[in-house]
Image (cartoon, rainbow, N blue to C red; front, side, top):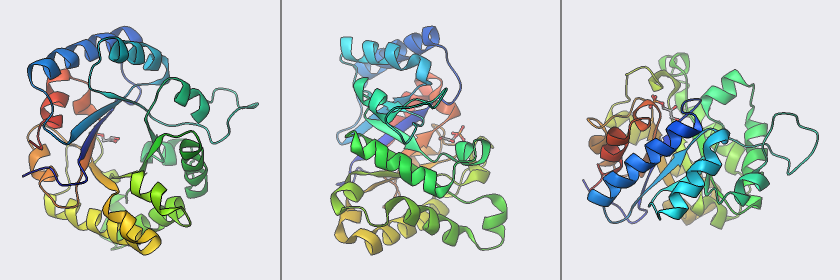
Length: 259
Ligand code: 13P
């Protein structure tokens, strides 16, 4: 196990959990753990609270210089306008958000986000100088019928085709098989590696050697017991963690697992 030259990014997607009081407590607990045991060299971590907790987490992280990057879970593709209930990438950038998740399967399915909408979000995230974490992944039927690779390639193409190589190099892709999210069923390290390698190959077809620099995360029922094995795979450069990121000790253990 070790940290490759791309470095490792472990991201905590809090989804629709944790109000801003609880968010402050969680960040303070994480800060204490990180003071006691820092992340390994070359490893970084981001937290992705709900919008209502972003400002609280930003203030806590900046005031105490906690080594956590601020992330968001989605954004709208437009900078401003009559879009009731939406939050723009421009607004997130003003909060010093660094990473924005785009196209999480829960939004593709629950909010009707299409590949085209995900691409427009990536445009907005890049326009405002942030880093997209583009989620891709097949469902159980697609895996069973042998369509997983085509599905994932199509999602990668939709988000990245025609982008400058620097944008591809700086981006993050999260491979999150839908059947592994919140189910306790993790992809085997071999399955995760196979798909992450295929994603890198597709990025290389689109953008050439820049794909060697793109960080590719695995997500889906990651926990402190399986994190190290997943991170040991050559094309797994990080993890996107849901449930296990809601508790400071487990997220800290996962983020340290590449050391
Ligand atoms: P779980 O870690 O709870 O399976 O969630 C994964 C996920 O969807 C992260 O974005």
